[in-house]
Image: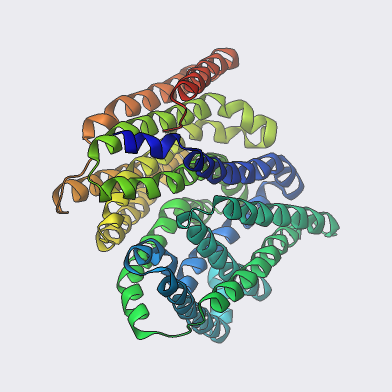
Length: 472
């Protein structure tokens, strides 16, 4: 037990947690505080166009990279340091080959692809280039995380965001026609991603010096290919609602409002990813030593931490939307509690998913996400017409709830060993988040009570963290 405590109170562990969280928080903070600029400069319609573009970029990123980055953690367990260098460069060659094939196919079918996506040819070219750069940046982020080089991760992430925001603002303001100024935002996102992606590609290829190794590819592909379907299903889960709102209503303003709420609630996903990046390496250490008591104790603290973050976010959201986006987006306020629940279920399902990754069982991860994505599509078909944006939000939350329950079942009944997180740990924190959602609706027109509740939660959490000297 003492060893477990030392992992979380040592200076190195706290420093790792600090930089893993500080980078995404600063990044999201920069994005968050520039939202009012882009929402006003672009307008709801063009904001919706940019949002749809980023959805396609995320989809292409998964296909281009073949999800080889998902094998970094298992490879670090299997290979020594020198082999790991060669492994990484070898699987990046595999990703580079995939990028070349997909780019060739896109060129051959550029007109049908343009007609299907609704974007002109030059925008599709930028999609492909940004997707390649984004994959390389994500690859670097994962590598630095598991190498516990949090400061490098911090520098990389901050650089991407600052360059992207700065260049986008410059280009948007230089565009003459307001109806097409989304081109400046898209170009401003593409160029920094591509430039930093090329730098990282050269770094990993020179560092490893291996462009093809049959053993490494055989190790990589059985793990990465299921993650492609997992990643594509995640894209459907996260963005299908925007596409279907566009198809069913033809209203770009509606898509823009819904996209704005998704952008704001994505703050929670950014924080969750930062926390998870800190949690997973130590979770693996505890699993290797069968220290299930430490996992339960630290996991309970982790659950409470994120539940309070979600609760406070819901209570503060109405004023944030009006302040940072304006009255044009007021209709999106009612969606926040529902989509916050979706983010909380995403967080909850990470516990059984991390357990499956530890046991190198990625097939069920893909099956679960595909199943939830299918359910999301069906529910959107049923709910968007009668309920509009709220129907899309409810469909999203229901799909993530299903995903959480499916992975809980897999972790507890389909993987050998003892899953260390009792289900009873989830009940109090879920009750807290549901209570905060109810308060958010009941006190929607009363800002001061909501803010007082949020401040009280934050003060209690801060005091608890200082007493324990650790976030977990």
